[in-house]
Image (cartoon, rainbow, N blue to C red; front, side, top):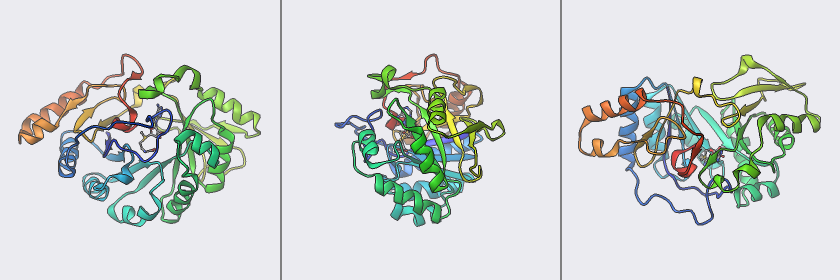
Length: 306
Ligand code: SAM
């Protein structure tokens, strides 16, 4: 199984589909030690082989390195999803702590588009992080772009090709504040591919390269070991049948689906020292993992980590 851990719900960006400018965050969280113990408890009760740290923004979590070390001790593959703003100077330490995979979110290929999407001027910092990540040995490197009607997929694809990174377009999901204008902003993977074709990028589906959550295409004339394009079609073609993801939040709740609003509160069991109860609660939650009744979530994405 694949465990995603949201180490903080706080973020240094305010992407328009994710967090309002005056975002309110959870008043309390599990301590760093509690979060590590919960990660270990989940790994003891379920066959987890991969952990990804996410957020909010994981690079602003003071205990990030500690969580990476714990995750690296628990499983062979430790990844992180970050917006890349504060990443560059942390890269060597992250690598030494045991981080093996890196996904950097980037919704636009230029500074103006970045500001419109993220409400901050950090495009150059993210670009510098992408380049430094490759130099630090994070290859293959993945870029994640949430697609909206404003997205220029060809510009992003050309940036990914120039930087030697793989690009994954994520269909905008009806989660948190994205709900307000979701029907106007959402764009399907199919329309994105039409936009790529009209911009002169010839792409070919390569289902041998498909991943559990994305359909992968190669770009004619581009080495697929360096750059592929993927489409995460949670809206138009969900991948529940191959989903083995579970999620732990910084409040200590375990969610077995991105659209599972309630989750299971593990913290009281840990705080009471009820380790047998913790094991039962984790196994019970995972045993009940099922596709959602509807692909909608009112709670904010930053709380559950994407
Ligand atoms: N701050 C980190 C980042 O930006 O990558 C990690 C947390 S962020 C919540 C994880 C991923 O969720 C990002 O790729 C983000 O763009 C994506 N995301 C946030 N809201 C979304 C939505 N409504 N639909 C689809 N993806 C979304």
